[in-house]
Length: 139
Image (cartoon, rainbow, N blue to C red; front, side, top):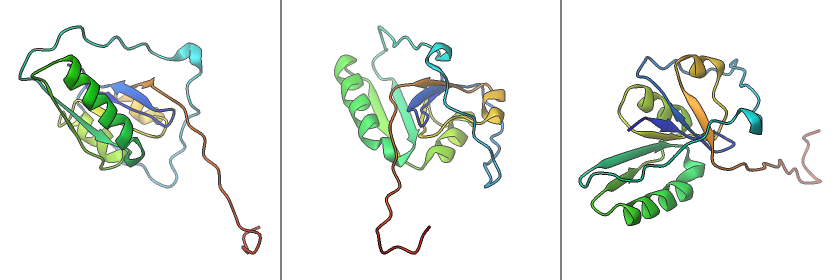
């Protein structure tokens, strides 16, 4: 099974094993992929009983991962899906180290991550709003 990750447009990615480079506050993230550049993902039609699939990544994707787990285990009896939420960067690191099968990330892949062979497969997009109260000194 290929390793996969998820991104802020809520993506899954595949990758070869290699060293992960940590993000810094100076890391510039690329824009989300255009719909025309999205890689398709074909889910498996059979999975051998006794297979364990491991997912780790963004805490904001816990409910998505739980739904994936429930549906996958229902569709493929005898398969176990283990989920964790240690954050996007930790999920990518574990994926690159072959410790997990799927990394669910909530941000775009950096150019460096893409150079390591990671490919994001969007599963959804979300919107984020910053709300500041009228009495807040932030301007």
